[in-house]
Amino acid sequence: MASKVFSAFFLLSTFGDVSAFWRMECHGRTGLARIDPIMDAGVLSSHIHTAHGSSGFGLSATYDDLIQANCSSCAVKQDKSAYWTPALYFQDNETNTFEIVPQVGGMLAYYLLRGDNVTAFPAGFQMIAGSNYRRDYTVGDPLSPDPPQSDWAALKQTSQSDLEQRAIGYNCMNYQKAAEGSLQRHFLPDKDWLDANCPDGLRIELMFPSCWNGSITATDHKSHMAYPNLVGNGDCPDTHPKRLVTLFYETIWDTGNKQFKGRTGEFVVSNGDPTGFGYHGDFMTGWDVDFLQEAVDTCTNASGNIRDCDLFVNNGPLQTDDEQNSCKFDVPSILALEDGSASNLTSLPGNVQIQAGPQSATPGTGDANPIISAATSILGGLFGGGASSSATSSSIPAVTSSSASPASTSSIAPVQSVPVSQNFGALAVPPTTTPAPAVTSDPGVSYEVVSTQTITRGSQVEVVIWKEPVVYVTEESVTTVTVEPPAVKPRRFYGRHALQHGHHARRT
Image (tube, rainbow, N blue to C red; front, side, top):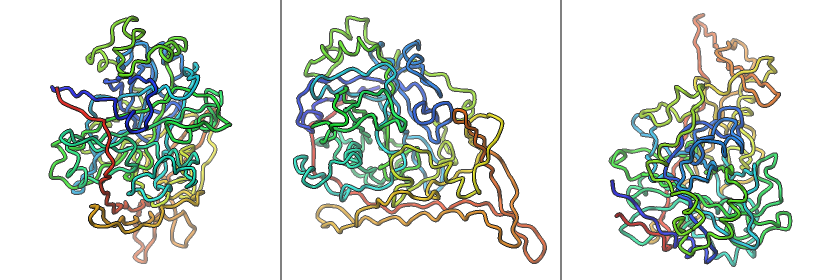
């Protein structure tokens, strides 16, 4: 099999920064499962993630679990951190089934040493980047290139929400052409455009915040961190004066694979997002703090290659690809029968429904799971239960989070027409998803319990009761009607940006 070698020059050319860095190669995937020990600690996540790093990853993984694990899927065996993001799926228009897009080369986690007095992640540190439920873009027209960074402040585009949206990138991979710039396109292009322009796949990029207030986490898992005013570079806010390592994730998905040729459909992120605006990532450190700080202080070779760092090389040989790929986490028994890589899936894992917008599915912060609030509004509420139970079962009917009451006033910026010469088309704003009807007390309608769902969150036990309306018609026959919101397919057209950069790949 041909290997692919990736240059790190893009980071320097795109952001104009020559600070030291290294790129951690995590060629192995430890697993693919509905697990998120930060946002959904102890219970099943609503959607599936691709995970890399420590084999100690699990439903309730802690720092100790990670560092005491017996292997890492990264090249430097001392890196027992956990890195995870949503996976990418393809939905076939003819069959309505889903299949996972092949992942190429695991992932790369860039450790960028930007700012003054860069500090290693403390023990127990964790953070997230991105907003799980965002479905809009509020920093101008997503089809247009970002304005120069020097103009962001004057344009009032340096709020944390603005910076977070610009920290996501969808990079078209075509090794026969000049490479695109990183973080230049902030949306997920549609399949027709990817087929025509990106034969070598799609690289999804994510920059994490690096400004720190000194806490290892926060109640919302993100407010202890903030972006500098230029996303990866610039000044930190006064509330977050300390500078940690700047993390930058890359995962490559083989959207150009022959298995998708000649088929109509769309690519969708595993959290039900076809727009790409709701992409996100999580990080839990698994480093020995002193070891990582020594790496921060000494691994400063301009190449960014971990093989050029004596600390990594002299503390045991780097792991081979086979060793990295052999490292897996233990799948909990509750997920034993759920295979997110199976073909012809009738729904996204977790019964996640596609939520296209146009507004964010929830307030856009990614801090709360809207599935519960949606079930509350549709089914009449949560009922306290006395028994503890496992988390969501895949047999539970799906609920679209668009049914939850929106708490955000943000919306997509007005669509503007673009000259045909730029190969852009009019961006149609997708219609708002029609929420499922609420349970009512209409004459002639009764409701039968069809299943229940018990969710344990710490000391609180919540029970969701799923009901079906039974409608009595004049012939005195009984018809059962299942409440299910219609699937909404967004109409989208994405053009190609002219901005390019020096990140390239070659086959060897």
